[in-house]
Image (cartoon, rainbow, N blue to C red; front, side, top):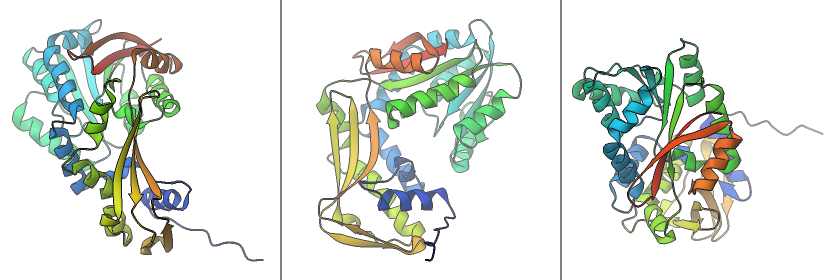
Length: 323
């Protein structure tokens, strides 16, 4: 009896695509939406009128800048401002500008998996806010946080904006928050964005715009499989579909096969068969209420220090510290 051939993967992307598309039901991680084209599409999404999240958080930072800055400097006025998944830093620059102009003693350490994103952010800050000390950290959140944590005892303010926590199911979110909490000292703060429950139609519209930008963003994972792994997905044969459950607060994105089809992925030496209307689950976007945020914090060994919200209370930035 011969042993089955072990598939050897060169990258995490290859392994995750193979696992996700040979599983039932099929699934692919939303982190693979992002490449150069995906980054551009997400910038377009953030500019859409339907995608309220970016503007709401921007308004919170704009309307409460001084208060937030004072909170960061309270107790120990010298601090590191560490941002997980910094991106282009558009919202963070509101805080950086205020901190710089008012002579707060801090350094900014943006963390991102993408070196090109960090290079772009550093270049833009040198032009716009040359007095800000920037130390980019390339890597995963926890690798970079561990490295920063081992440097010295300076107080850390950790930013996690954009309701990125919403891409995690509750149990995963607790694990994530616990990992952050374990790298925090007593005077450190976690400043984190949560998209709150609201009219279900508002939420659906944010993830299913009529112009099709969100659909293109979701389908970009298939385009990446074609370009990087030698796949032959026909993107027109898949429909982007969004659902929202107001009870659990979970929005889910799917790609749905419009017809029965087989897709070859050369690099993985695999043929993937789809039945008509079969789905690939691509993304979760969790929405919250105050009770759930307090429960997540408690489970992770954190407590809510304070919160900031927009006028309609559609979005909140919570400030958490160790219990």
